[in-house]
Every structure is written in structure tokens, then in C-alpha cells.
Image (cartoon, rainbow, N blue to C red; front, side, top):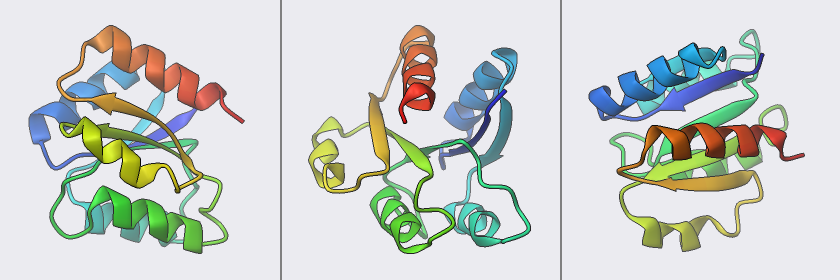
Amino acid sequence: MATIMVLDDDRALLDMMEDTLGVLGYEVVAFADPVQAWTVLVDVGSPVPDLLISDVMMPGIDGLTLTRRLMEDERLRSLKVLIVTAKPQLDEMFKEVPNVVGFIPKPFKIDLFRDTVAAALAKT
């Protein structure tokens, strides 16, 4: 089963996403701190997850900066990113970032979350 990194500074939402993905059988690595998540991602000893689910508005490193940094790292360039945001108008900012494979507007229903994650993982 796929490994998914989940990144959101809203601890309640992070826990819900982590629990939901775990029940679905995914291996989940969850972070509330984007700087800590970035440190793990760039560690060459850490495996690259199959999908990164990231909030946009976070302290330290925002979601747009994070996705752009992924594109600059040869090892992480192909990492698929699913954006979770309470500001759906921000999706325009990500249209130029090729590794962003989808968006989930907050708040969302579990069924939408599950289906969007499955669709993102299926994209090549």
C-alpha cells in the first residue's frame, strides 16, 4: 500500500486525515510542523512518500513554497502533491506547479477526501 505524508498545522484535521488514511490501509507519516516535514523529506535516508497532502496556509513554510522547493530537488521532483485548503481561490497559484495533482477544499467530507486521495495516487 502507498505511503502518504500528511502536513497540516490544524492538529484536529491532521489527526482526522491520519486516522482516515490509516483505516484505509495506507502507511501515514503526519506532521503539524512544515519545517520538520521538509527536514524529513530532504533527508536522503528517508524514503520518498507516494503522495504528500499539504495545507497551504502554515507557519514556517507555506504550501506554495513547499511545492516549489520539491520541484528544485531532483529526488523529490516527482512527488505528487494534493493541496488541502480553506481558500479554494488559491488553486490558481498552483496551476504552474506540475506535481500538484489535486485540491480538496476545507471543510470536506470523508468520502470526498478518500476519493480524491485515491485519484491522486492513480495519476501518473
